[in-house]
Length: 247
Image (cartoon, rainbow, N blue to C red; front, side, top):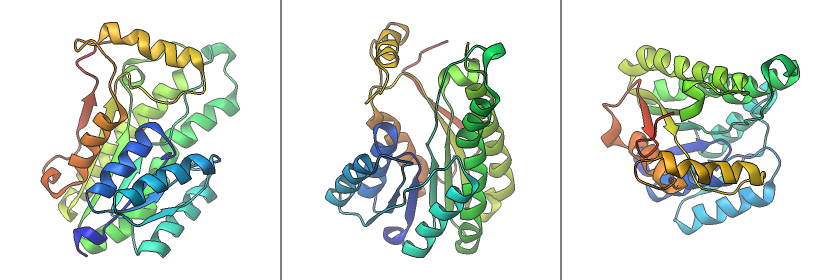
């Protein structure tokens, strides 16, 4: 399969980092599968940007936090384009609850989206990658999540799980031409539903040596590199895109 016919599935790609990744990979020549759980309008905007970049696009709406949702999304991607060559597990939620007050349903939901989806979609994508002898799995962590969140234990656990999965898949499938890496963004600008979250991200600029927050496009540039043939010798790594910030 030529690179121009390779396909990238990006979960949570209706806006922000996910949308930027979709557009960057479209410019690199990949077919793009856009995914969102509920906001079809946002996914349509991403699809329009992908089309403007010259790529074929399919929108696979579905909830990656559900086993059936993951199966349906992967099936749509494979039936539409013949396979998934690049899997970008970007979708995540980050609710905040004190540990002793945390609802178990909330705990399960965070892990389902942030960790179990990465497992399920990798399982769906890998057989085709192995058959073609080429593939890229790119997971997402987060600067604070890896160091520990106050009030977000479930987020930290999900991201540590994704990091563990990354290292394991890198070792198991590297010899088959498949790399697995994880990107850990720092404070990144973007659309936010919660004004407090947006304000918090802007406040974090003071902790970044570059003196500013990053952009979704700067994160997407790293994803683009990892998905390229030039990124073939980067495997099992966590790439931090945080301007040198420390927790």
